[in-house]
Length: 134
Image (cartoon, rainbow, N blue to C red; front, side):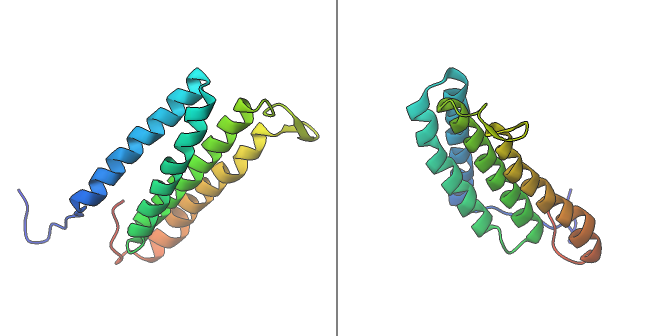
């Protein structure tokens, strides 16, 4: 049962279809990575990353959604960089010290964590009146 104070987060069907297609592209990218199918894996980066950027843009009015969708976008970036470093055989090349090319994927991974840390530790406690989905 809902009462008059219940709020709903409605997603237009066209957006929802795009989000669902995004999952399909992401799965194909990761399956290609697992199976070492380079052309498919690299090709799937483009639609997977593009749709995540579009989703982040479309949800920018709700800051909690924007932060989570930006974190997903940098996660896909990190994941794609890591995949390509393995595909092209440079993942274990030393960049400096004991840091390899694969370790550079930590930059966008950590960026995602920092975006969410900012949201949960700084923004959300100071904007309790703001519309939030989390």
